[in-house]
Amino acid sequence: MAPRNQDREARAARQRLRDYQARQTMHASKIARRRRDNILAVIVALLVIAAAVVVQVFYFSGGPGTPTPTPSSTASPTDTPAPTSTPNSADVPDPAAAEGRTWTGDMTINDIPVGISLDGAAAPQGVANFVTLAQKGFYNGLTCHRLTTSPGFGVLQCGDPNGDGSGGPGYSFGPIENAPEGDVYPAGTIAMARQSENGSSMGSQFFIVYEDTTIGSDTAGGYTVLGTVTSGLDELKAGVVAAGTADGSADGKPAIPVTIGSIAVQ
Image 1 (spheres, rainbow, N blue to C red):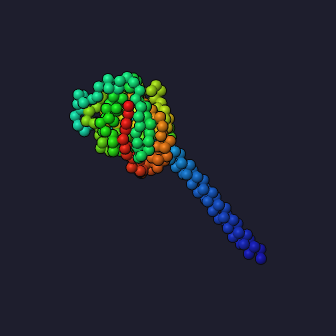
Image 2: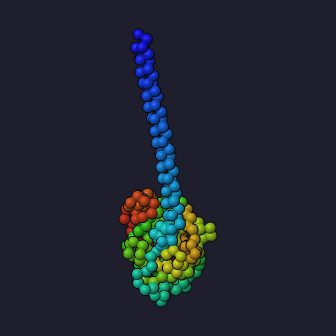
Image 3: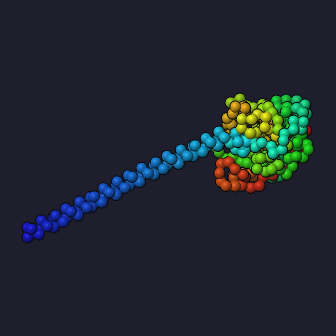
């Protein structure tokens, strides 16, 4: 009997050892899995932060206009690409056309009335250009091709006849006027998009800031502020911004078609 008892005890001991080893292996596996999950979470967080930084740094440098603000969104209005036609300085409206005064008016975007006020004294060249193009009907029917939705970086970029951030009125102008100190563009700001590092690349593209946004200056400076939205910003946010971008990214084509109906100023 004694040998059989010892045998059973030995088998039981071996089973307890196997169970213990299995529990240890499972525990080690869980720890390793947690470590992998934690490392993956850190990597994802770093990628998100890096993407946000890239959007902020380059949005306006790519054509703020991509402000692609060009508001053209290197998180600046994405820089507007160079005009496809040869710029003709003779076509640039005379700054005197801004009359050194405040211009008021309305634009419609997807049938949403948006009140605007333009400061012809602070940005005579930019306002003269905007007013002249508006009075000629240049903007009627053009699209808003770019929307950014990053926290603290909200712009809608419009005014490109090509509809992709590459076009303009056939000329470009500068220099930058009325750029804000501290690179902060409050909600409601209307500003000109441009190419990064090029203060003389403005044309027809502009961007509307729909939430307080910081756009870092480049070597050329900041972005020409034309004026402000005086009414309709909440409606614009609800009717256009809330739908996001077509591909779900933080910077891209609006999910719904966005068209300027008309712009009237006086």
